[in-house]
Image 1 (cartoon, rainbow, N blue to C red):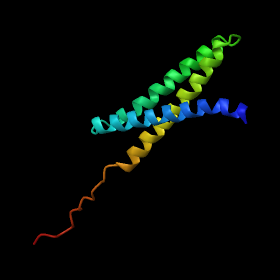
Image 2: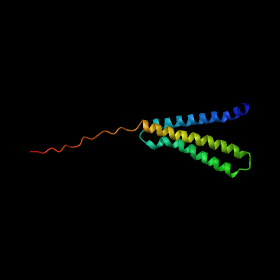
Image 3: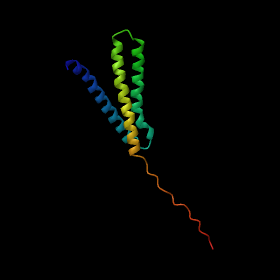
Length: 110
């Protein structure tokens, strides 16, 4: 059980990063309500930084520092995906309502 508890610290970090990304996404949505794609930017940035760290991990594969890069990339990729999913949920929830236009009735004028 002690061996398992060592790895739960990374799980807590993933949860904190995911909550931070959700909070940033929500704030971006509240600030930029008219521009709909802005709420996806925090998640996209997290994913890009995660991919960059993953490439650093693969470039220094034989060194011990590659494990740090790999764990950081996993945390950022998961946080970014959670952020993009929360932006998608916000977008579906706040979808603008379309009103039906009343069609012109075919009325014959006399």
